[in-house]
Length: 437
Image (cartoon, rainbow, N blue to C red):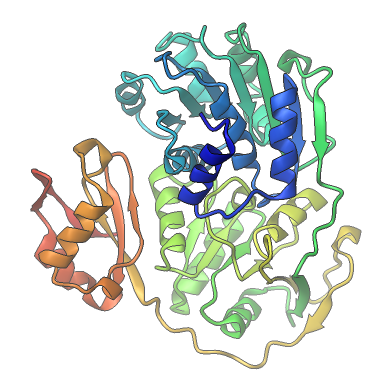
């Protein structure tokens, strides 16, 4: 358990974190001292670690059943938290279950019952109803991004889940938004509330407006992307239809990018984020689904191709850049005759005449049809690429290892050659497919 300073520091070392921030330190203390805690803090401030560290203290290594339940609003957030728990190296098993993938995969993972179960409301309700594991040992409940989780589970799934949690004695709720009413069935009356939303960080965020000479902003966006160069960033649209239209336009302009929105298949959403994380693309076009709760690095900039309808979405989008101590820029594209809502506030108007060359991405991504369940490690994959692929260390990019597959970033210039060399080779006694993503 992470109940000593030494053990806590060992976990932070594994996560490459030197020390906890003030919010996290206060949250640890509050969660330890209170049965019910509400943590309100901006996106990107480290809420996940703030509840995971004290959560570990509640687990009993002698009990081989689910002891902690983390409810999340999206698949991406479930996967992200599962990854953080695994990287903490606590020795406790964690599994993420969510809609959009075969229930058979859940069943296989739940045969070896995890201590920590992370899931979306609909998928959790399904497993609860089918009694695929006992719920009587669940003592700790976390509802992450509770404003969204309750909205996702508004069809009765959240209330149904709560009916199974009679033995919970520690409740933690987090959000990056305040003012959301908490349904009575969550039983959070008398909770200790920590509100860090009103504390303005020493933000290094610059907000700049770019004027589009016409109502159609496509060409202005292209000019702006040339202005920022190859830096990583997100272009936000309000609707899927606008996003798809913009993506087709950028394809015609040969501008490499990937997309992220709610209607995508889970596999495609996951691969879009992997390619952004490993540098295979630098531009993500997204709806507000990408404004919080997904695992991507700090962006150098974000672009509001369209202004969101409410201040909350505007704030969350901006929270994807200038995080912690980094600098970042939020660009607003303003069409001819367009009026911005009052919550936008003041910004600097700029012209984007000076263009930088956008070079094709150095990296591309390869898929490998083997993962953790096949006893394959990152070291095994690196060895395969070094020995049979004949590449050097600087030609091996980020490796992301999943339960049943892996993704590897390699230089685009040698990707086809590597596929020819490595496809259908044996890796840990398993013949694996190696293909371009």
